[in-house]
Image: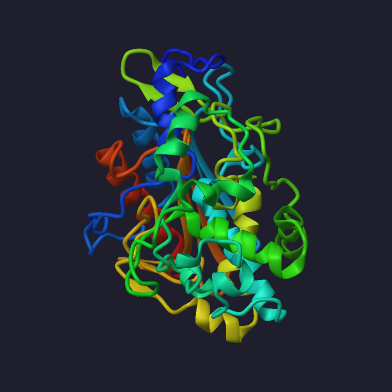
Length: 398
């Protein structure tokens, strides 16, 4: 591939520091957006058309160097890709490449919490005051349910001036992940708990802390025992540092003058932790979302609570079609049908993982650049259109 100059990495340049401040967990303004525009009469595109859509994404001047989408239907898996997984070597993206999954990590903390609900270690109406009495008294009435569906009102630590100052100065700074809420400990709730929806990275930090308090076990251990092992995830982890395991899908910041700049290891994971720090692969993410959305991890009783949705509540970034928020999961209603999952973005990556309610069919969709409503709304709109076409291909009638 020769259309771009080779990406560079190494010393973190000043131009990346500001990006790091807003990219740690993919924190974005929760603004209203319409569904991706697509004609209702359009048929699900065939494989060649899907492949062409991916090529058009990477051929945009502001497009990602690489994109990989994995469609799974029962035992059948189809991998679509375009561009490169590493602009230096020119190799293609692979389903076994490690990558940052950004806020899709929130679905993992949702899985941990709901499994603990099934085991009676936590209850959806448990409050921060009951489980984490050391947290600010102003937050004590917030429930686990409200944390899971982002109606808690907790102030977002990743938007606090103190956090932004630190990570702007040193994007690889090692935070004490269990003290991230300290950045907003002097702030009141943004609104009465349960009164409205507002996406906040603080919610999933609090969820992980509640899981630890209820069990006496580290969150990383709970992830392994309650999620990774039951679903057979061999290449998924929650690191503290900035290194990615080999092989990895390189993520880039697109510089209009200098081309793609490699930011795969520009930002440490400790400042995202349970809200966005997990590293996985398209293969593992496929297995996770099929199990999670398909209900294999939780009881039917808990799943009924999880699948109570808030209309118009967006994941960040917005996914395909119309979005509604449940407990640690979003419902994406497209022109072709409905899937359930989560999106995410961080420096170098934008993610979607979604599956049908029975878990039989799934889609993971990864581009190797961060895009959002604020940073590049035109690219995001294009990505959402392509994602919807992939959902349609996933759901087409046999």
